[in-house]
Image (cartoon, rainbow, N blue to C red; front, side, top):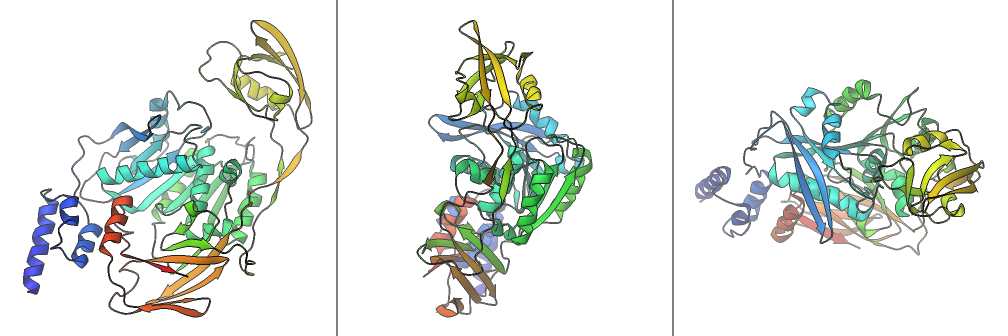
Length: 502
């Protein structure tokens, strides 16, 4: 009988490799045992050769009836559809713009050229496009990126444990935000000239520094960066290390808000990526959450909070007061305007622009009496201002020159992170078939089981706060395993059982 089962299994694998058996055929074939199905799915390799390699392809993610997000992928020259291939995601800056970047097809090769041949010839590159409707750190924008990754994994043989995220400016801030809130798909994060708290501040949702324990990060800032100078950012990096983050931090001096250090740093970054594959079966996890959207890390999920309880001593709050030195008028400019000056788009409420009575469709032609030819000139003139300074703008309004007067706000201090919701946290570890869990303000949680973690022939035991709450033999939940695979297309994180625990 055993020989017959082995023969059938080998026949299925051979048919699947030849492309004569589809994923649905395998999943719906009840003659395939749960154990065999697990092996088939975890070794899924039914990919077709790429039509062309060494090329860029533009694709689209249809988010809803009115929102379609474009993105680019680069298929490496040496892609072999039979072998798992690394994936690097690069997130651009300036994601708050109204429209997607118009000349993105020209931008993508420029970024690709920054990486060495060993990456461009052997790794997939993914370049999402974002705007104010798909901003990197809100739920729509984050799901947009994850959907693009999953679509790529369905069509190409992507190495599930070697998916890396980097990006510059807003892209760097977003890399931090994924590491803090939703690291599950990724092996490591590489924020460049970003601000770790941007996602929290923009969405007004909390982010918790101890969550950085679960993935490796390597961040870079520069000293002359007018947005996120290293003198300020290193305070947050120090705080992250105090919280237990797996973090490397590097600074380059004499450089502003630019990627001028790419030649020196990219090879170091790539080597660091090669040293950090994803390990979803780590024996310890710390996770803190206040939102169901960000309640999971690998095999741990916080499913219910008891926020009326006091936090335990080990659940500490990590935050810091930051000095706001930025000089901003508080309006979005119209990027489609081609004339001289800066055409005003949306005005931010209670901003300097709002208090000056700047209007949408005004065209800024002078600042403090000096000509403003474009947005770059306006940004340059702002560098000579400091908080509390008075300012004047001359604008064209209905073809008439109007002079407006205002004042930038005084220096203020603010909390880096918006910690406005009560959170719960869990510290979990396992060895053998035993799980030991400590909780703080958590009412319910779930653990995910994989055969590489435990021996399914032996009972699994779980203690929560020193009390045994589970002791039983676990079998593969076929429906759960299949649904998990379809949703994530992750061959390595092929969880076979979810155990919910009070």
